[in-house]
Length: 226
Image (cartoon, rainbow, N blue to C red; front, top):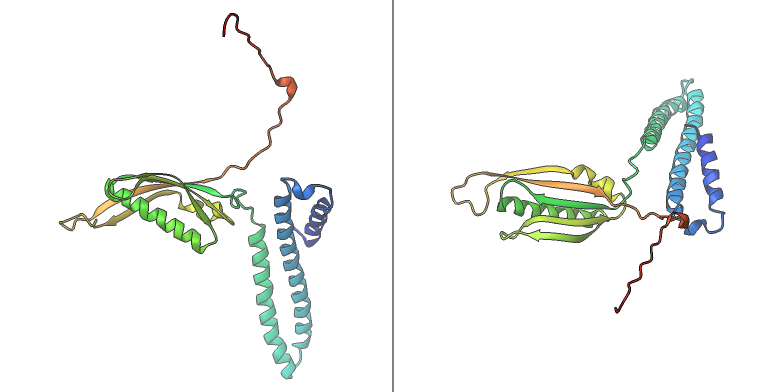
């Protein structure tokens, strides 16, 4: 992908912003995000071009044997490193991303093997995710819970919303295991407990258009009193 290709796409998207009512359409948030991505990529390409020009100039100066040539050699090393870093950043940005990453997500934590100890572990995981969200600009909202008699959770479901919520938490899905001596264990035996975590991207609202010609309306009338 070249800078010219990115600029063409950017111009097309910016033209959409001039359309009446586009800012209030559901397409606007995705378009605005893509515009920001394109602007960042184009800026990186321009930085590479600028550094490559400076590199050519430094290479010409480095051919001598004076102090200026020595400084040019140092600059060449620095510029080559900058260019490689910029190219690596562009490569990372161009890797296809999971389209669900920016979405809010629903997290379900269920106690597995281990009885009361598993329910306590589930509660600790829930508190950990809530705290993690607070330190990473994510907001948690408890949706439902099923407390256990031991003070933990048989099941707890919550929403996590904010920038890249699903992308941040999706790798937490799976079975989590802990091996430790429970507080209620009098003989110091190690117990193994498991908890399952499911992370689901929150579905987006969609507009449903119903063709009136596809509707069938039946009208019933009762006879007699009532």
